[in-house]
Structures are given as structure tokens and as C-alpha cells.
Amino acid sequence: SPLYERVLQLYIGSEQEEGAVRRAGELYEIFEQELSRPLSPMECETIKVWLDQDKYDPDIIQAALRETVLSGKLNLRYMDRILHEWHKNGVRTTYDAREYSEKFPNINWLDET
Image (cartoon, rainbow, N blue to C red):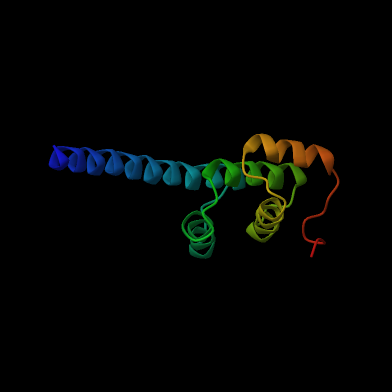
């Protein structure tokens, strides 16, 4: 019985990993669509850091991308500031992000330090 439980855990874990990889791939595609150009290797690395090291949820990254596009500042440095500020203020879901953006609609993320 413990063997079967372990096999099941490994199977479920591999499905979750596949889902995460697929979601990350979709995220890169969304970036390229929104920016209307292919991502540079440096931009790909930045997104990878957000996902792997900073452990940002792909939905939060996508919300920050939306915020960046709406502000007209199409660069990842601007997005990084948004993600950092949201993380610092406990924004963990897209709902939290929407509420935070409504509270501070005219914030310039690059001026915030």
C-alpha cells in the first residue's frame, strides 16, 4: 500500500509540474503578444526569475503585465517594480492586484523606491 501511495504521489506531482511548465510557456506567449515582439533572452531570464526564484504566481505576473500595458510603459523593469510593490504590500491574487490598482490609480512605479 505505501508503494502505491508513493507512485500515485509521483504521478500527481508530475502532472502538476507539466501544468506549471505549460502555464509558463503560455505566459511567455502572452508577453510576446502584448509587447508585439519576441522576447529578448534577458527578458526571458527575468520572467524565469519571477517564476522560479521569486515564486510569483503566473496570474500575478500576467496582472502586472496588464498594468504595464495599460500605463503605456512596456518594459520589464517597470513590471518588476509593480511585482515588488505588490509583494511588499501583500498582494497575492489578481483580485488583490485589482483592488490595489484601484486604490492607487495614478502611481508611477518607477518613481516608487
